[in-house]
Amino acid sequence: MSAARGLRGTRRAALALALAVGAPGLAGCEYADDVGLDAAAASPTARTSPPRAPLPTQEPELVATEARNMAELDRILGTGPEDVLMRGAGGIGGSGFRNSLRSAEKGTHAVSVACVGTPNALLFVSQDTRPGGGSLQLSLDCGALVETALELEAGRVWVQLVRNSSEPGTGAVAGFRISPGGPGGPAP
Image: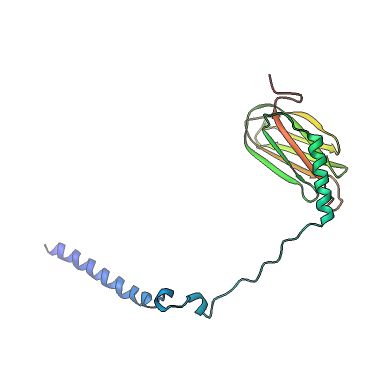
């Protein structure tokens, strides 16, 4: 019995200590509903963030050039096959654009790519760095469709298109698509 009483006494003492230590901290809390004021507005330490600077906008001429180039790119690339594994298009006037796919099937794939608005561009297609992963690097003369075959392993695929010139933002665009099978059709 004395052991049980000692355990109860220890629990009571711990509870009393917790209330004694925590109660002064709780007494200092104030809630906006309790006093009728917004605590943040009444607080002298309330801070406001400075307004954000507006995002940079492109020059209207550059936007119009990029739109014309994108229309020409769509014409060059055409609609392509229905079973496209991966596709992308965008501006390459700055640092280009990237696209990725989590899961490609192993096999031969057709790569179709084109660029407009700059003399040439670079296409990079890569997989994991493990041995046997597919990779492709192409230098493109812009204004024409380029098609080639690529052997891919099952897994993630990364594609990057960049312009291959030092000209400032030109409104240049590029696009690609990767389809099952080699150039000219699906795999048998």
